[in-house]
Amino acid sequence: MLVNGKQGNLISIRDRGLLYGDGVFRTMRALHGKAQHWPLHYQKLQHDCAALGLDCPDKAMLASELEHLLVQHPEGVVKLIVTRGQQGKEARGYAPPAQTAPSHIWDISTLPDYPADRQVSGIKARLCQLRLGQQPRLAGIKHLNRLENVLAAAESDDAAIAEGLLLDSAGNVIEGIRSNVFLVSHGKLITPDLSRCGVAGVQRDRVIAWAAQHHIPLQVRDVVLPELMDAEEVFVVNSLIALWPVRELEQRRWNDFPVATRIRLYLNGQDDR
Amino acid sequence: MLVNGKQGNLISIRDRGLLYGDGVFRTMRALHGKAQHWPLHYQKLQHDCAALGLDCPDKAMLASELEHLLVQHPEGVVKLIVTRGQQGKEARGYAPPAQTAPSHIWDISTLPDYPADRQVSGIKARLCQLRLGQQPRLAGIKHLNRLENVLAAAESDDAAIAEGLLLDSAGNVIEGIRSNVFLVSHGKLITPDLSRCGVAGVQRDRVIAWAAQHHIPLQVRDVVLPELMDAEEVFVVNSLIALWPVRELEQRRWNDFPVATRIRLYLNGQDDR
Image 1: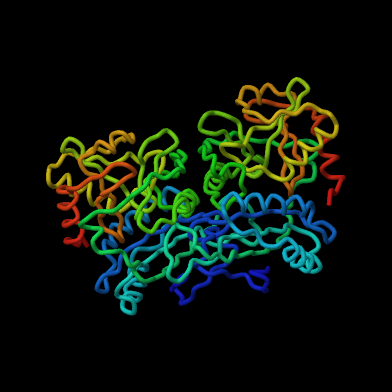
Image 2: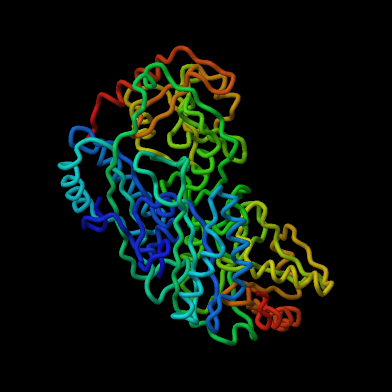
């Protein structure tokens, strides 16, 4: 674990990441000593920092620290947190200090022990009761204000349910608690518009890019629940799981995942660094 | 500064307060060695912890720690943060661990140097561009997901503007960035309903209780901007400023604050412990 370039696992109680969730983060998979899709993750980090008016740490510096960490921990989950840094001694309150020195934190942990067959046989998912609020200013950003995800995850402790799907207050399907969602409907790929809420992940971008490369029609737009339930396939993606087809969602069952399988092979097989 | 009962100013980078903003806080004024309205703040803390499914730290333990802190720091701002504690070594992700050991953090700092005449002559306020999202599950709670407040505060660095007023996405007036708002309209006190967004502060409750005691009609309900602009008086309250009348808001000016003055004298003069 590294905090601002130094070994350690502690941060100031006056860090704005703790005080206000004033920061962003990335979660990556370390595989054979490499952080998968690091350039894409850094692009997202830059984008998300800019959206919050945060200075993004230098790419070369982060890459160098990451490389050192991966020598010691070649496999697992790499988490990178960037916050607006420590609240000034004089400054108090919500307004960002004029001079900010962002904090950056690396943490590596063991990859969760996901059953391997989830990628092939699919998962059981549920619909969350919590509805995401709409906040266009924070939509798409992987920021540290994640209480909605926490409350949604707390709704169920059924170990057989691998993911919860979230709707927003208007009834649109948005995402999984920790994943992005796609559907295959009338032969088209569709993924929800995330301009009012949700987190736009790296794997979502990779699927969108894959579809463009293969001239497969893909729409980014609002999706209501009946459309999801009527879809030929539904699957979720993120950087740790890659892709899980949805086999079961409430009363609905799916048995075949031909499109999801093709995309999964792409997501797993190719390293776009 | 105390972290989980021990002197210190550091917390684990795996604390869920940092990772997800998974916690709540209180801000109190220390005056002559006493934290103003501590019992009311503890009630709010209990309420907010319960809303997040967090174990609230024991009142007697907190009171004892607070008492010790106030001996050394009899004047200033007392901040208390309670988080869901450290993420387990095995557990990862948003779901709260089955066994939680909440963290609690005390921090005392200097009272901001507010011009004294703001209480009497009123302040210049502005309307924030950011609109609060609606999330009934988090509404009213003083939780650590405060990016909306940060972005709203970042909109202006005009030192002459003492507070920004926030509307929600539906156009309702909700609160100040760091205060609750009241208006006097046709002789009635009105304060916005906070069941979809906003933070319900201790001073807001005190004003509501004062009105009940004095048989002054008070409504908690939706307020649209034209009603605020037409009001006879507008004022904001919180635990540090007590009460500031609004003298100027965009193009609107107010000159007299008879009701606000009466309430301010109550808020400042009485200690309800």
